[in-house]
Length: 260
Image: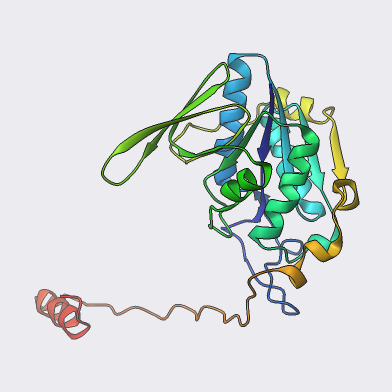
């Protein structure tokens, strides 16, 4: 079985994230980045399926040069190979264009099982798995909080607010998993060293038979028109209780600000 995990390189949520002033797109090259945390659950799912049977796991990413780190993390966790789609024309692509690039790469890889996380920690849209399944003409089994692969059948449990449902499909298909699906493993020292010898291919748009006009900011369906920095946090209000009036002062503060 050929399993491909679609992994995204995102700005570190704990670092200083910013937009590029020239086009208001997310700055992915000039900030610290890493493999999206939600995609680690997808990598773990793929590795669990691999360990239960005969399978090969490839990590696929689309992004700038630094996005190679997302592939590297997947390889360190235990994936067998990586593919990095790298092309300057990709910059500014929205979910529609990203799904096009991924679908072309997945078709070239001849994937039997495509695994996504439930979304990305920078965009949070969660629509790309469905878009990719539509482009590939494959069924989609999405947002699984529990995943079982039995031969050619993939079965998930999807948990909603009021109930859970079981959904299944037959390979080949597109799968996405939630952050409840498993506990991603930490790369071991052995895994980190082994990752250095694993094959990683770099593909351009031309390798996928795509043109720059089909992707990028110029073809995006959405555009960020204006960005305003979040104002700095102001100092809070301290209610003292030196003379026993603290409780009354707290009530007055909460009432005045309509917190009560």
